[in-house]
Image 1 (tube, rainbow, N blue to C red):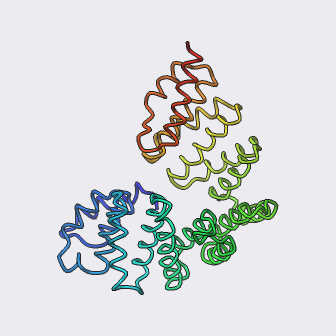
Image 2: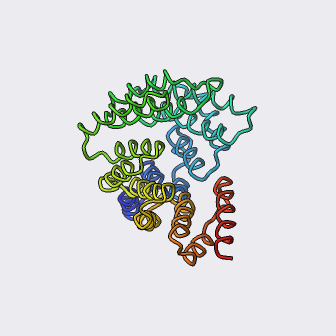
Image 3: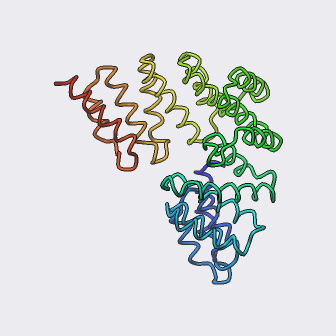
Length: 325
């Protein structure tokens, strides 16, 4: 469901309800508003807060507030008494993989082990848990074998996902084939998928990213146009618009198209991705020799949350200074 619709539904529920309940907290979290979720959560009775469902919501609020370590410890303790609960296992696994990304090399393996145990338990309890299947596939494709990564397992889970959600399963199967250097099979899988789902923004987007890697810029642009056209929400649309701008920045072609795409993406994108859009816009303004706009856009980029972006922006500042001196 569109986040704006969820947020509106949440606001209406809150205004008409005389008491807070689990569904209102959940709606606020789904709307991406942990502050509102926490406000409503505090109105729950002590009994409701102490229940398994209440404790799961409390942990989810921690996760959405960026308190990943606290959330991990919370769900780990909760799992001790509720080993057969799907949500407890799923959110323990989710918090563990977030912690693994932040942890030192010595701690990563421990978090990865907890993640696998919790997520595998989740799908053992609920084989059609789409989010758990997607998370497991992503982990097995990204993690080294020493941490438990296994492309064969990723393939198994992708086929399992396909039975539950054919469109997402096809997309993940293509990802597995690309990761295992079976490009022709990935291409065939997506082509068949698009014959079945001709208005699938996600399948066009996935194929476009492969074209970008192979520097097939024209094909990438064509697929991204279709991904933008068929996007069902702002998040997917902004993602495709960003990649359209990135394609222009990296190819040096269709600069005006890229600028238009990024300008449209900026108001739609989530806060964390706006600096990357501004970075790509700066690149395109430089290529277009519009140095005034390049300077203005570059000055707006917030790099405090991303060291990789900070390094790229530093290099771009030097380049712009050299061009304008």
